[in-house]
Amino acid sequence: MASTVQQGGFAGPQSAVAGDGKIWFLNRQGTAFFDPAKLQPNSLPPPVTIRSLASSERTWRDPVDVVLAAGTRTVDIVYAGLSFTVPQRVQFLYRLDGVDDAWVDAGSRRTASYSNLGPGRYKFRVIARNSDGVWNRTGATLTFEIKPTFLQSWLFKLLCAAALLALMWLAYSLRLRTVADRIHLRMDERTEERERIARELHDTLLQSVQSLTLRFQLAADDLPGDMPARASLINAIDTADKVIAEGRDRVRELRSQQKGDLEQIICDVVARLDFDPAVVVSIASTGAARTLDPATLEEVTRIASEALFNIRRHAYASEVTVEIGYGADLEMRFADNGRGIDADVVKAGRKAGHYGLLGMTERARRLRGKLAIQRRSDRGTEVLLTVPGKIAYRTRTTRRGPF
Image (cartoon, rainbow, N blue to C red; front, side):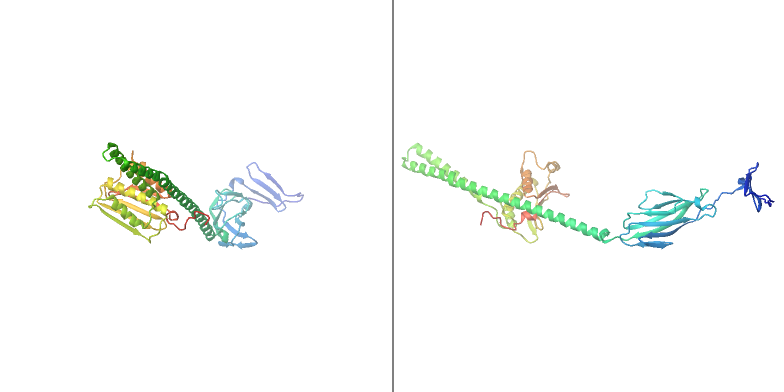
C-alpha cells in the first residue's frame, strides 16, 4: 500500500480500480491502495459466550448453573460471538436439549427465547461461525433447572395414582359385593325352590302313593290267602313301599343342605369313597376356620367330591393331599402322586364322554371362582379351587320376607 498528499482543488474522497486489480483511494491525507488478491481469510473461530439468562423480572449475568423458581415457564438467553473483522456477520446455531429436536438457525440474532417450559433440568448449547464460514463447534453451554410446583411434583403424581388405585379397588369391591349378594340371592332362591319341590313331592305324590298302597293293602287282606292274585298284589305293594322309601330319600336330599366344618365334611367324603387302605390321605387347613355360606358350602363339597372321586378312580396314587386355606379368599388344593392327567384333557377342560371336570368348572364359575387343573412337574395331578371371600364366607343373613 502506498500514499501521497493531494495538492489543491480537492473536491472530496475519491477511489478507483486500477488495471492490475488494485483499488486506489484519494483523500486530503493523500492516496492509498490495497490489493484484494493478497487478502487473507479469517481462520480463527469466533469465541462464543452466554451473557445472561432472564426469567420473571430476574436476570443472571454470565450464568453457569441456574436454578429457577417453581412454576417458571419462560426464559430468555442472550449469547454473543466475538469477531474483530466483521462482527455483524457472525452466524449462530443453538439448541435446548429436550425441547428442540434439531439445531435452530438463529442467523445473526443473539437471543433465544423459550416458553411453556415444564419442570426439569435443561441444557442450552450455542455454536457460531465467522464471516468466512469457520465454525466454533465447541461453543458455549448453559445448564439450568426449573423446580416443580406441588401439582407438578412426583409426590402429587404418586398421590393421584394412589387415589386412582383406591377408587379402582373401591369400585372392584363394590362390584364384587354386588355379585356376591346376587349369587347368594340366587342360591337362596334355588334352595327355596328345592324345598318347594320337596314339599310338593311329599304332600302330593308320596302321600297319594302311600294312600293307594294302604287301599291295596286293605284289599289284599280281604282276599283269601290261597288266591294267586293275593301274592301278586302283595308283591306290588312291597314294590310301592320301596318306591315310597326312595321318594323320601330324594325329598330328604332336596331338603338337606351341607352344614358344619368343611374339614370334617371332606373327611366324610373320603370315608364314603372308601379309598384303598394303602393310600395315605392327608387333610390340613391353614388360617382361622370360617363359616361358609350354606349354598357355597354345598357347591364346594360337590366339587371336592368329584375331585376326590377322580383321584380314587383314575390316579392310581399312593398319596393324596387336601389343603384348605381360609384367607381373604377360600382356597382348596387337591394333589396326588399318581400317573397324572393327560395334557389333552387339561387343554380341553374335559374328557370326551365324561362330564365330571366340566361340572366342576361350571360350579366354580357359578361361585365366581377359579378352578385350575394341571399336571405336576414330578408326578400326579393338582386341582386348585379359589372362591372369592365375599362369596365363600357368609357375612350376613339374607332376609326373605318383610320381617
